[in-house]
Length: 572
Image (cartoon, rainbow, N blue to C red; front, side, top):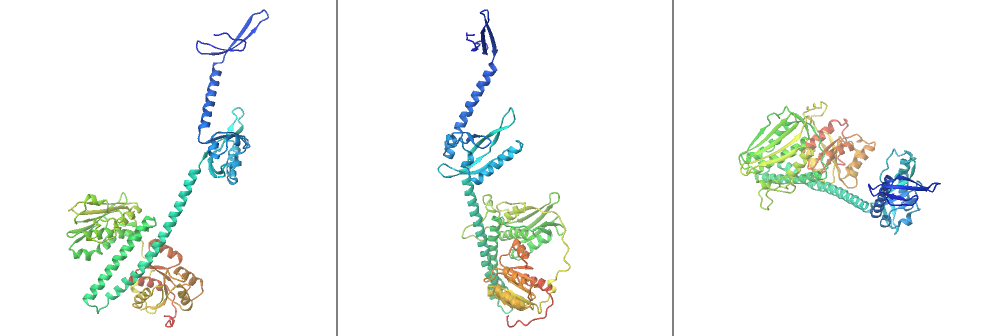
């Protein structure tokens, strides 16, 4: 040890111990020394100094603003980051409440959180609060804080608040841009949906006339063979155009996530046989064998699925197989996995096959194996992409196996739980037995050709038809004359179909309970549900099929009250 005066500290060189030595003189002139080992105290002081230095460095260099305040919110310490974040130096902020730089509406949120934690005596943990503030320059800021109550370890009382404040202005700006982008995207999707609805209406409306009138012309007995052939070509071309329109609309709905599935009990064997039978003429022209291999998935197997969508997929698969197979056969095979509840469908052909490097194009939109202007087979390139989208919407899988020169196998697997067929409705009308003699039908459409076509179909089975060019005229006629059914277009000038239906139902007139049938080109399963919910009894799509129109009117008039015929010659 080295010498020290009274009360001095002496460090032992041996062992590195710290001693506090107190010396005092005795009455006889001697000296008494008292030594206390304070090594642990000195280590604690060194550790505290090191910790304080570390905290000081962190506070100085931290990009976030660190602050301490009393319980009343008055700041007692602010780290140097305040200058970069708020434009205020620590000296300018100390002594103020931080609420002084907060937006008044947001200061209340921070205070509410602090009070909740304080009143819970620490049981409730603090949470992050975002708030608006103002930079010294006047620029708006977005900050984030999480005030934590400081506790006196001796008494357990709250002594103040510590906080770490972060600048989240860039993040909030990004969120605002994302919200604007989402709003723009939703607006664009809405515009696109409206455009598609209008396009559907505008394309289907003339197709209604083309397909309807060519069908009527082809039934005329006096046509020459050449003329009948020409009419048949027009009919085939118009139906091909209708398929293209349907493909575009279906794909757009899949992209927008607007396709709704409507499962119902379906006999698998009947569904497959019906799909295959439609291609008998095309297959016969090529001497192709159409084979149905339904094994354990025959008429006795009834499962829950959307028959219209499965039929659409089968038409694509079988139609492509027949189109691209020049000789041999096309086989439609079905298997059912009882344990997994999966229905598996394969369409196998003996065609030319598809090269491996071309197979990836099959299920991509607007892609075709042969996209050249000289390709032998036309098409939009959307059919299989639509099939893929539908199968994935059903929760299934889809794929292809093919080898050049050895044919192809297109397949899909979908969940399809076993169920039972619903019993037939004994009270429903039997359309085949219905008579239209004397039935009065109001046909409402702004296109004269559509009205004429509906008139020809309905008068051909004995109905009396009155025409209205728009919803306003329909309302006026409905107020004057009783009808057994009203065929109502949806998109019309002056007053649309919805408005006309509402007005007719609201008035105490002769047709306030008359069945009203929607007549629209915008037909899909979801729209049909909305139209029925709006009050339309049935929905007839455009292009109109005679059987569909006559069947809807038959069902409607079957329940119409028996009314005395009224002379409609003046308004027809």
